[in-house]
Amino acid sequence: MSKLLPFVRRAGRTAPDTDQAGTRRMSTSEKFISIEGIARRYPAPGGKTTTIFENLWLPMRRGEFVCMIGHSGCGKTTVLNILAGLEAPSEGAVIVDGQAIAGTSLDRAVIFQGHALLPWRSVLGNVAYAVSSRWRKAPKAEIEARARKAIATVGLAGSEHKRPSELSGGMKQRVGIARALSIEPKILLMDEPFSALDALTRGTLQDEVRRICVETGQTVFMITHDVDEAIYLADRIVLMTNGPEAKVAEIVENPLPKDRDRTQLHHAPGYYALRNHLIDFLVSRSRTMRDAMPADYDPRHPPVVRPSLSEADAEAIAASTEPAPRRA
Amino acid sequence: MTRTLNLRAGVLSLALLTAILLVWQVAVSGTAKTEAMNPEYAALMGATATTGKSAMPGPLDVAETIGKHLKDPFYDRGPNDKGIGIQLAYSVGRVALGYGLAVLVAIPVGFLIGMSPLMSRALDPYIQILKPVSPLAWMPLALYTIKDSSLSAIFVIFICSVWPMLINTVFGVASTRKEWLNVARTLEVGPIRRAFTVILPAAAPTILTGMRISIGIAWLVIVAAEMLVGGTGIGYFVWNEWNNLSITNVITSILVIGLVGMVLDQVLARAQRLVTFPE
Image 1 (tube, rainbow over the protein chains, first blue to last red):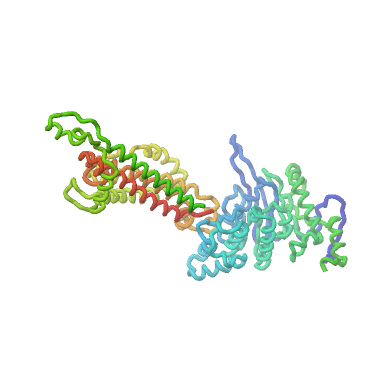
Image 2 (tube, rainbow over the protein chains, first blue to last red; image 1 turned 120 degrees about the horizontal axis):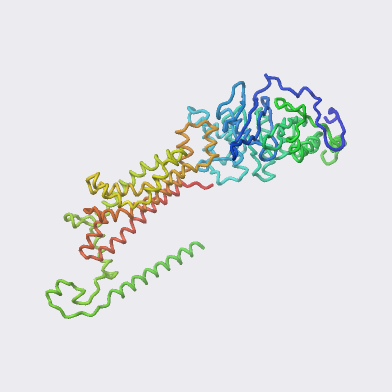
């Protein structure tokens, strides 16, 4: 498969490659979610206002997994809260499936950073609470069946009657995922869902989420600090410059194939180029870009970027095309 | 480890009890000097003056009185001679009524105040001023408006129980975790369902703490209130026995009041454990 990819070798920094113009604009019919010119401002001392971000535009396709990356304070969580309907934008609107959103909706499920389980309910009780909110008139047996199915999907069958306090951090977050999935939302919103977990648990949960989302074609918007998590999970990665007055610096298309293996990801061609690009952004460009945006920057259409292959990728490709005795 | 600790604590408790009883017995068994006096005057003065024996009963006298009360707690021989069981029943009944009324008022009102930051701030000065008022200070006002001493006592219990419950309910409701409320919001849960399925369970431990403080205060206040209004109740019984100079009965009442107060507190402590959730 590596032979199919055009191979551009550039020393040092990987330059954004916007040649693949097919990805540059998204047609209106494609847009499942469209964030249109939203802003969020807070009153600051002295009668001034602080603008976290303004004129932010972002389209998403149906079934797409979008990750947003940026430093603390760039308003990532605010964007997610606006998508969820928990906060209202100061300006602009969010269109989902052709309709402007107003407030929260059962169509948009949120997986909270701190799991946010109700500690006085059991695992089943927590999920059933969501199910009974979705299908208010459903008979008890159906609610329980749906809840049990969602719990089984995240691999927690058998723990239905445990209380959240009896679960490990990873299991609690699984319940959070089950609760969100149980209401069959159109969009799944995740706010750094794995940031509080240890690396091993995080890995398995990423696998679970990826499997579930690929199987169900779920549309997902996720916030993360973790570059590798974004590379593994996302179809597109939205890069935010530092706040206040944060902007969508660019939208990075993930060149890795849909069929991914987390443990072999670093052998995939394009991995290093993508990773370097993202790290470079977080290390320096997130700061420098905010102060000096390119002249042709159009907030309505942030540049779409597909990083080209790096030297390390070349080695990775060379290694993967050679008969590798260890992997055979 | 805890078993031996419990055992050791039990043994120490018993030893303390024995020591106290012994000291008590020794302290009251001595006799003081007596002076020769006119026999008619001596008859009026009673045993202390004539025999030098202390008017303070010893533990054995008190035990005997307790035994008598236990044998027949519910006798009724007219307004000034009722069994201790009947008196206690009156007191517990008044507390139950006043306290129950306070629960019915404080928890719903506290809920509404707690959910509204505006009401919370607007009503805070009233609560802060009325809370520290001794409940007995309400008594004249209650007697004047209600014109019934027994109902006035119930009102006093109500007014002293209402504040801790109100304040705790407001606090518990207002400090419901935002993330739990957000869960309810994203699930489009209506306000009434949210109140019962999220806010009430989240605030229940704090509310129960308020209820436990209130029952303690109510039981303290009922004794004083009944001393004032008279007629029936354990408070009246204590005062009546003081007027009869029956120190044994006063000591018996103190023990009984303590015992009932402990039971009331334990009942609420158990309820509190039922609604407390581990995190």
